[in-house]
Each structure stands twice: as C-alpha cells, then as structure tokens.
Length: 543
Image (cartoon, rainbow, N blue to C red; front, side, top):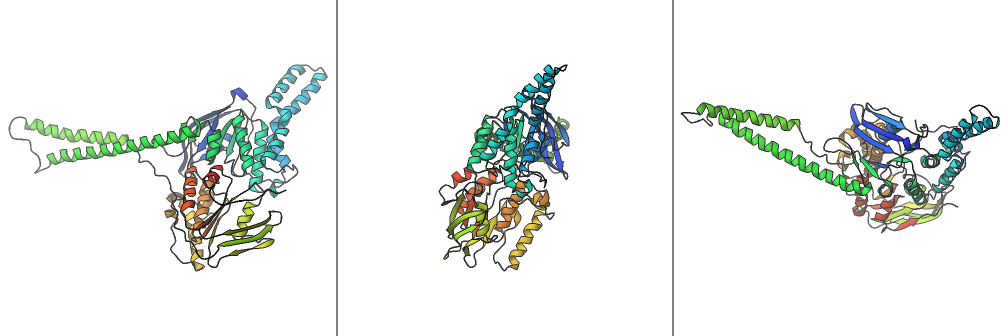
C-alpha cells in the first residue's frame, strides 16, 4: 500500500506513535518508539541502514500494524516510498487523480450542492457552505496547477498520458513527489526524497518543505536537506536504555545531542565496569578470609561476632553485585565502520579513454574523457543528461552508438549502479562468495577481503537473504561486490543513495585516499561540496 488518505483535519491533525515495537523473523526492527508529528512539524528520521526508518513511515501511514504499541492518525496523509508498485495500465494522469482524490471529491461536492442550492432544496444552503469550506481548506481549485508546477520543477514527466510502466524508478518517484506536494495533505511522509532529484529539484523540494504548513516526516541521508528543513530529529540508532531519542534544534541539535549522549553512555559504562571490578575484589577478599588456612578471628572474646561479621560482609557484597546486575549498563555498540581495502593502481597507461561517445535517446554527447591511474572525476548535470548511461558505457555494460571506449590491458573496473533492488533469496554472504569464485575463475590474482572485514554489514545481516535486507543494506552489498575484483577504477552512480550519513562520510574520506581511480556521479550537495576540488565533467541537459 503506497498512498493513504483521510479526511482533512488541519489544526486537529496529528500523527502519534506510542511505544511502538516491530519484529521481523524474531529480530527487533523498532523498539519503544514514541513520537508525535503535528502540522508544521518537520521531523527528520535518521539511523544506520536497517534500523527501521522506512518501517516507521509505513506504520505512521497505516500500511503496517505494530506488534506492540499503537499509532493514532487524525488528518489526511500521503507517502512517497523508495519504490512505487507499478500498475501496467496506470498513467501519470491516473496517479495524479488518485493522489488528488480528496480534491476531486471536494470540487464535486461544491458542484453538487450548488445545484441543490439553485434548486432551493431543503438544507442545501448549509450543505453548500460545508462543501465550499472543505474545498477552500484544500485550496482545491489550485491543486492541479500546484502539481503541474511541481512536475516541472522536479524534472518529472509532464505528459499525463504516459504509462508509469514505461518510466524509470526515478521518474516515477518524481511524479509521486509532485503529486504529494500539490495535494494539500495534512501530512507528508517522504522516504529518501532527494535520491532522484537534480540541483533544481533539490532546491524546489527544500523550499516547499520549509514553507509548507503540513506536518512532515522525512527519512533522509541528505545532511544538507536535514540541516535546511528539519525542526526535530528522531534518532533510531542504539542508546543507553534502548529507546530512540528525539532531538530538538534541527540537525545541529541532533549532532550535538547525539555526541553528548554517546559520551554519557561511555562514562556510565566505564563507571559500571569499574564498580563491578571493585565489588569482585571485595568479594574475593571476604571469601579468602573465611577459607580454611586463611583469616581466623583471634582467640578470646568476640571471635564469634567477628566471624559473623565477615560472613555478613560476603553476603552484603553478593547483594551489591546482584543489584548492579539488575541495573546493567550495556556496552555502547560500536557502529559499523567502512574498512576500505587497499585498491591497486595501474601506472604507465591511461585506464579509460572515451572518444566522442553518444547513445541515442540517452546520452546526446559527444562526450570525450580520459581516466588516468589514481585519477578523480566528478560527473554532474541535470536529470536526463545521461550520467548513468555514461558510466554504463565506460564500464562496458552498454555499447555506444557512436564513438569508442578503450580500456587499458589488465585494467579492472568496479561499477556501483544507481538502483538495484534485489529479490535474491541467497544470503548476502553467499552472493559475495559467488562473486569471489567468479573472480578466481577469471584468473584474477591477489587476496580477497572477507565480506565481514569490509565493515559494511553485520554478521547477522550477512546471513540474511538479500531480498530481506533494506535498500541501504543492499546498497552496502553492491559496494562490497564492486570491491571484490580489487578494481583499478571505481565507477559509482549516486553512491550516497540509501546509505546512512556515517557511511557517506566514510566513503567520501575513502575516495580521497585510495590509490585506485574514482569516477563519481552524484547530486548530493554535501558530497559535491566535499569533492569540489576534483575535475568536473558537467553534462548539459537535453534540449
């Protein structure tokens, strides 16, 4: 279920999740989540890949029910998911009609009650006033114009007769997003909305979210968007008591609050461990005094009392140890950290050379470029300019219609494509090991880095079927698979899509230090800022 509606409630509108808990296959996905979204709230939802961010949006929307806890919804809402189920018969116009159903109904009610009013029917005046008020609340007469403006600004398909099945994932997402921005819902639930937007679209979305009166719940890895838009941040990463944290003061407040939270957790854990060691020493000392050959109370008066006191000391220490165990402080969980393998360089020859290449309908060109050993290249341009097509041609996965591409002898290329949701039922580890066997069968020498050593997936996630991993976890596996062949050149198409904020930072750092050549296609504003010292190939938009 991907679109949800309810009656418009405006000032009474509210989304409330209380003590929500969700499990999948016996594994907790969300634990004790409590959060409230009102109109005007702009809630950013962050956390490592697999922490349940998308699951929480589905709970708020009513597409899922929690295993424990409850969700209360008052008002209308729309959700833009990472993927949209495709009805082969539905068109762009049909999707717009579905999303504007409340608007269409409100306008129909005005027309119907106005006819009743003209016919002087009983109760018509009151019914017309109510219908008119509902339509004015939705600003219904302007809804289609708002959608058209959003379609244009987001670089979406504007032809309403175009079937959705003929469009890419990104094209469908942009249409859905434009529908939501024009519909006038009380709440917008957005899952990674920047993944498919170019610079112009990002600026338009940012402006819309900053000025909307709707409540917004936003899952995003985009640090710039969170900093520009979010008023509060819900952090689903582990905390000292296992409960998610809500931080005020926007993204800066989250960064400061999360840093302080982790410092307090470390301090509490260190104190807990130190106290446990001290009590263990006290217990050992008291027990030694009671052992044969050990301490004996001196002869004479009071020896029974002193022995009793010593045994009492043992019992008291035991009670304190038990009390400490009842208030156990868990060890702060060390987050996954990318361990980038040392990739080889291949000096002495140009790795990649493209000469006046173009692909009909996808890459107008002609495009010429060279990638030298250890070189860097940032590829930018608006949606539709052919950036993904260019990488596919360079990687040898798509032949150019004109021009040619040459690859240095013995040069190995690693490609991370933009989107690749997988239904593979094999475990992530099995998929990785199958790629390793392919490498060895191809006669590629050198040691292979185990999947676990890359710091991309936890041990539990490495054992799970790929189809059950989140989009971000599958993206991590895609990166691991590109590294198997120890490539001399990495080609990455929108590498920040679906990845956690921490991994994006680690990946950016790794780009700067790897001996391999790196070619990156990205719209991510922070990554583009971080890599603005790289040579830039800016592809023009298609006319």
